[in-house]
Length: 294
Image (tube, rainbow, N blue to C red; front, side, top):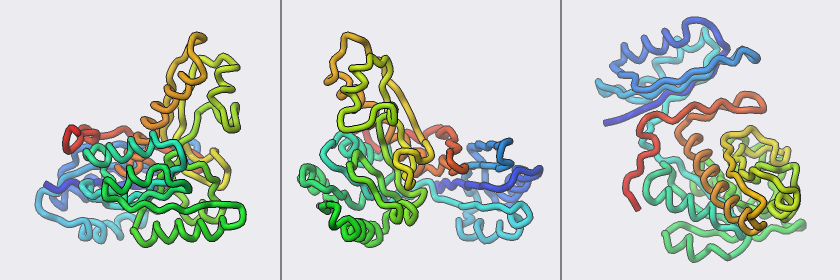
């Protein structure tokens, strides 16, 4: 059975939910899940609604039929097939935990994505990737060739039809031009205690300062380094008895989980950009179910 969702953003006003619910019912659709949020500070309204088309209506027909009714509300909306897998390019450097986690979750269907390519500035994970029949692209990046390297990256994205780039511990800073071109379509993961602990060894710095919580933050990439709209965060408690190496290991696990949850929210159309922050709706029942166990 087909299952679709509708995403809506517009100025907040009365009658939005009533209009949409009436429209879907009139077109033979049964609503199975709905989330909405009014941002009182900005006057913006956000909604995600899952539904089942019980009379065979198509996404195209639903989209075209809503155009006139949406205009008075100043509405931006989209209809999406929840069974469709989003095409993703993953970028990685020399830390492979997030890449391996994404590959596994994609393989078992826990993440509804199709990884259409992996890009790295090193060769470390070539065998891991090609053994899963996924194209691997090694694109070296230096100060001298950065524009050319980014042109190659964008060429891979365009040639594969990728809709999302996931930076799975990719240790290169993207240019402002690339961030603007792919706005809202690049997700990154970093240590949640940035910018307090910057540099190559943030876990070592955290250990030296005796922190009690470490964690990770996943966000959309903007031209402001590590300052993009936040999608997902989590932490793990640590104690004085643990070593810097323990911090790294625990942090690695949190990073992988946080990144996968951020990607899950994005591809399920649960994330809405709201200025410099996001609205992230909870997952509907069954959203985390995988196609197979392993």
